[in-house]
Amino acid sequence: MPIFTLREQPERHHEIARLLHSEWSALPAWSSLSAISQRLQQRNCEEKDSFTLIACHADGTLTGTASVIEYELDDRPERRYWLGEVFTPREWRGQGVGSALVNACIARAGEQRIEALWLYTPDQQALYRRLGWQDVEQRTVCGESVTVMVLRLTQAEKAPARESEEPSP
Figure 1: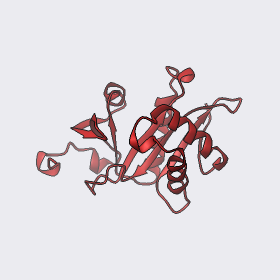
Figure 2: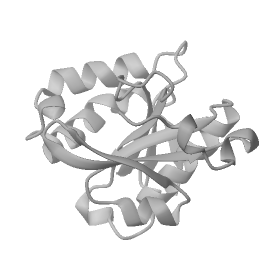
Figure 3: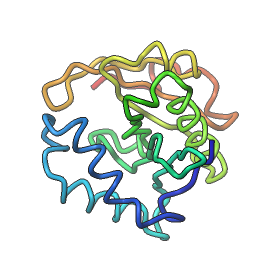
Figure 4: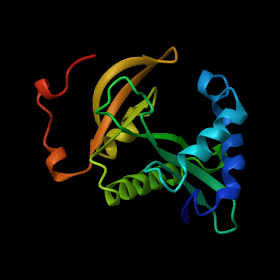
């Protein structure tokens, strides 16, 4: 399954925005299609470390997307890069698209020398644990109970954090 950056296929940002909006429009950050589209454009500028990846079927059909986002949650400055917007259309779920996109984001982040990726999820903890992510905390984001998780990407960062290194909120 081919995976591209949105920078390589910028004409697809409206398609991605529509998919994300259709799935999550009940959540405040996803209620405006134009705001989603604007975030995608800003995030995928050449001068940014953040990026969006898209997976496509051989016929060009979009099969999923995932992004690395700077300061998705900005209350902890040491948590700079976040995996987010991992989405696979229903007809492509269960075929490894999401995992392939997550692994591609991890690989690209490592190439960019990003030391750690963070994410939050309300219901996919088991998937991310299988991929090596570790639970950090439970919290509420936009009224939804989520688990914040981390994946250390560099050798120095892979050592387990001591309690004193991870202050509680």
